Image (tube, rainbow over all chains, first blue to last red; front, side, top):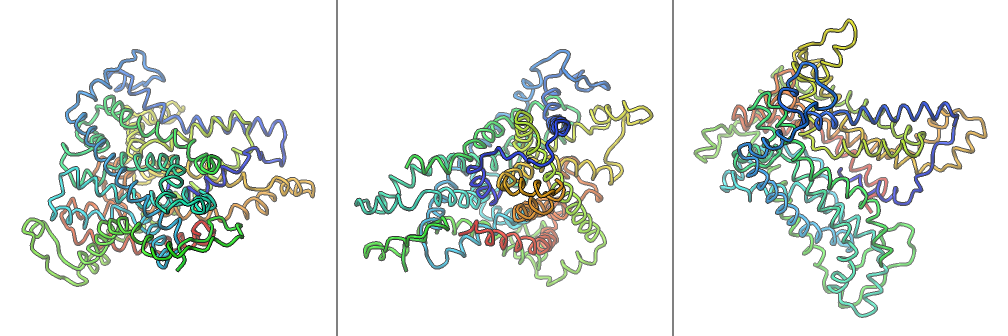
Length: 297
Length: 319
């Protein structure tokens, strides 16, 4: 999730993905391996399956001492009750606003910084790279105390603006780092050819780098979206419940409503759907993002 | 200073075009581009970091928070208090132990799954990737809540399934009464959620191992184990080092899982350094004490971070 990702992507894009280990390939061995692989996948998927199973069960089946593998009486009641729950829709809207503001800000600011370290050679460049790498590693929770006090002084606690700025900074290092990777992936010869053909530096930026970074911008913003959408500790600490997001809503409802697991799991599904879909989409995009740029050029 | 930087790809030999006179004048462009990001990072990451260190030498309580007065300086009082407290050492020991155990299990299992992915047939491999992608995509909080629900003492599916084993009584078993069992649940959750990143990344690394090398080794009579030890692992080593380092950093900062599984009020035996610092600050309004703990946490992680950065420069990812 942090800086290692681009390296892997670049490698994977090149590989043929057909290098099955050749050593000791017996039929029995393949069957054993396949069985192990399927068992592993089932084990991994079980919790995902269980949350879906729970969310479609009526209350009496959820709180049953003999849970069934499928709902006997499938129902959407839990989803309806999650949507009708206090603050659910407000918190959803808050989450959308905060996330979009943070991602848009990080994208603009981050793209400029990425351009700077990917395309220019200057004194202090290594220092900037070092800063970007280091800040990704500092656990944000440990900075929460001074951040809370600062925003409190600036009267920005319990406001969506304060959280948006915080999220912007939270996703900025990743954004800079990933976009840097995408921009370096664009052959420099394209810039030079354009310069020789009489483009100005600004035109090179508008006509070559920006369009070719397109897939990278999409992938990066989606990743930023996921990070900002999933955050709950900061917003839960800085804001009161009516100014929080859906993740914080889930946390609040787990502790206050005790055993209402059906609606809670339904709420968890609703909250996860956008990020799961986004994640699955960019997983494909990221692999091709780098090569796509060069081919189009 | 030339403006055009050397090519990103290391193999490219031709020297970059000489900058024209016009370009040479705009030396400040890279800084102008980077300044907005640097200002934001300095203001909301750098400054808080300094503030945190200052706070840890003061005594900030609720009174100072509301009055806005500068909290009194207390020197190293917070640190002496924290470091002479048995609870702090128990929390630190627990966090370190958890990190070692969970990272060891995750990386070994991740490696095993990555190797397995190379051995299974195409369809099964696709199934494994899809299963892992779903787990990877799940928000941390949601994943933790699912585990909370599955380990519920009355209606949890885990107790129900274990109770079915003959001679085992797990009806109404509470997983968090005994800290060892509770931590087993937390570790399972962390490993389960961490496997996709590790296995898929390491699998991508495995595709880079030249097939010819393995074939040659088999021809020369190498056992699969020998091929793994003497060919695959050495090639994979830089990648393994990086994902291990990242796992250490992430698991050392464990917060969400312990927080959610303990319903937002972790008992003393379920505190980690991050939850401990958070509870001291926001639960007890001891902001300075919490800051001191946070400073110590960051210092403890510093060694691993430096190692990570050095690795990143070494493998040439930072060009």
